[in-house]
Every structure is written in structure tokens, then in C-alpha cells.
Length: 139
Image 1 (cartoon, rainbow, N blue to C red):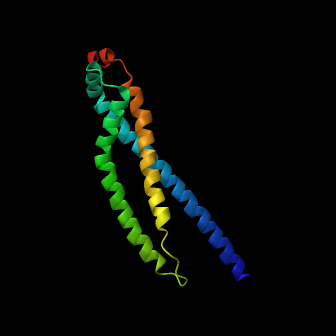
Image 2: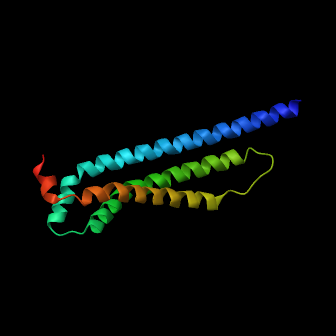
């Protein structure tokens, strides 16, 4: 009977952890979209002036991605280092020692950065394609 209770507790804990992780991921993506939207709105006139001087939309987006990368890459590296040491310390507490999942950490870093680039591209493309005359005359 005790083993059955432990199995149920373990399953409930696993589902709770998955739900918490998915919720945290969704909230972080929403926050990222909000930050990108704020910065995009702030730079809307700059995009229009670049368009007036015959800048291509892809070049405007590339410049914006490079500019945001100066903030995103250090934050990803800092969080990865903290996560690495935290996970390593947590794994040392188990009786059966498992090797550290370096591949999963590196994959997560690249997936997060790729997601950020996709979100930036989707959000900024619309603004970069706006007519410069409409953007510059209002406001």
C-alpha cells in the first residue's frame, strides 16, 4: 500500500513539474514579446528613416537582432552558468550519480536564442515594412 502511495505522489509531482515548466515557458515568451514590441515601437521612426535612405527590410531586421543580441547573449550565458552549477549541485545529492547533460544545456541555449531571433523577425518585419511617410508624419 505504501508503494502505491509513493507511485501516486511521484506521478503527481511529475505532472505538477511539467505544468509549472510549461507555464513558466509561456510566461517568459509573453514577456519576451512584450519587450520586443516595446523596443520595436521605440525604434519605429528610426526604421522609417533607414527606409527613406533605401535600407532593405532584411538589413533593418538584422541590425535590430544584432543590437538586441548585445543584451540577450550575456543574459543567456549568465543564466546558463547559474543553471549549470545549480543542476550539478542538485544531481550530486542523488545516490546514483548520472553524468551531467551537457548536450541538453547546449541544445537549450541554441533553441532559446533561435526562438528569440524568430520572435524578433516576426515582430519587426511588420514595422520595417510600414511606409516611411505614414510613420514619420504621425507623431
